[in-house]
Length: 484
Image 1 (tube, rainbow, N blue to C red):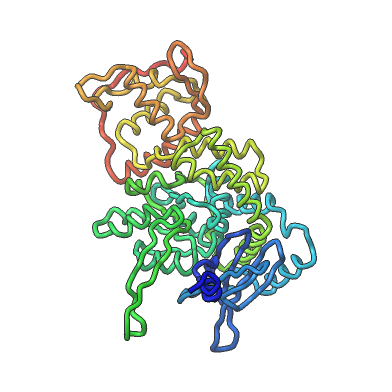
Image 2 (cartoon, rainbow, N blue to C red):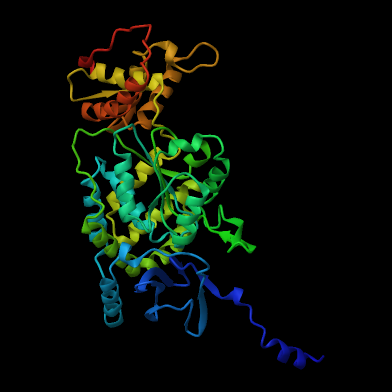
């Protein structure tokens, strides 16, 4: 065979695996956004509709393939059952959005306004501080953008009983992309993530510590990254034969628990530590039209910003290579949130506050208090007496705590070592309101009684109900607040 014959013979060879394949529920590749929904065509007939948006325009199709600039793309539907359009958005609003985009070059919504509306809505159901509110809101928006990122952080809502964990998950269930509250099982995970690309919400995540959850934990541990945790399973085909199918596991996930998660999951999470509130928040009405309205606005925010988010993600990754202020997994988890805040236009001060909160909590906070941690909180309150605020060093607090409570390996713990352990408790529970410059007594912190009492009510109250607090055998004379 001559070279000419060979070339002629192979002109007809086509490898469709080289086509860029899109997930039917949500995907962002090649500056193209695909959103898929299930619709009712007739009384007893359903079908799929795909919204395809690129720089070339917008189209709605029921086909599993499309072309842009003579380049072929496919939608990998397989046997996936998509989310109902009527449950997530509004068909009239969808068509109005498409018509608007076909005529106007302006944005569909003001992204910063939608972000602030989401925060305001969140505050109506949870007692949450400003930085946590920012993190929770931007994480929620990120569930619509996550296919852009090579990794997306998990969310861990950790709090005592009656502190709003379930209320928080219910809020996420209404606002996150295709969110589903499901039990801790691999089938539930596959149904939510592979078919819907949905946000997987797990209440009572303390159950992950139970035996026989090893396989699920392995999948969860890996699937915060794109391609991680994907599985291959033999699936029966109408009982006649078995087919090998692949299931994707990468998607946003949120866990609610009283205690800490299994060790391998902890450093993949953003931690939102709730405390018991004195406020009586209203119950979340899942039938309220406000939720569909909010989701519709977030879909529009996604359409407006997906190309900018993809570009900014590339830019920020390059910047962090030259200025590595964050590294490794910590950078992987924070970067999507930072990119989204930049594109949406979140004020710089608010971005910095959220970043500091993330760094202070990452891989460190635990909701279950030790006897030493209990004593540090109680000692602080005793020292403060009736004063609204006070400045103290960890050494000064350590001097008022029983020696037997400090961890030591040789039976002796120096005052400096004690101060280090007290300092960890201060940072772990955000007990201080401000860190001050060092003096001859070492590190100093400004403590406000309102903040210390809030932590005490949230953490020590559960401890006292579930297990009696240890009686401290040695009582020391407290330092006098007048000295400060």
